Image (cartoon, rainbow, N blue to C red):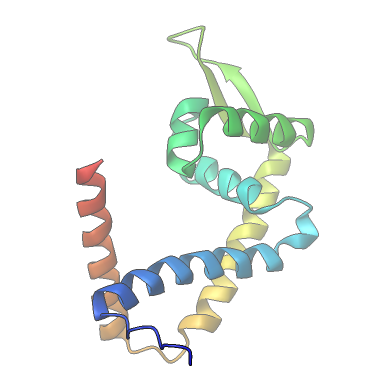
Length: 150
């Protein structure tokens, strides 16, 4: 006879829910963006570049996207080859390359933004605004706590 696994605690259920929700959210957006011909890491990189006020170094971009430097270099090589980003020399440090979107990259970001907004609206339709606000505050506070431990 097989023994049943113990019921997970609420803490365990919460962490699994956060992890799985973030993963499946990215997969769902990725599915909606397949027609762009770039994968999840590509559109996430484009979104981070588009949302920053000034061009980022490759290192800063890798940190924000959550990948290692060599992975970011490979991603940027592909995005640059496809005409979506360009690397420019930093005006303050010639060893540093800054990354910015091209016009075509901006068009891709507009599509990413449109698809993400439509999916978010679909998903959050009917969710109580107070519950959404509470969940958002909790997740933002937890992110801060996690960042403080790094």
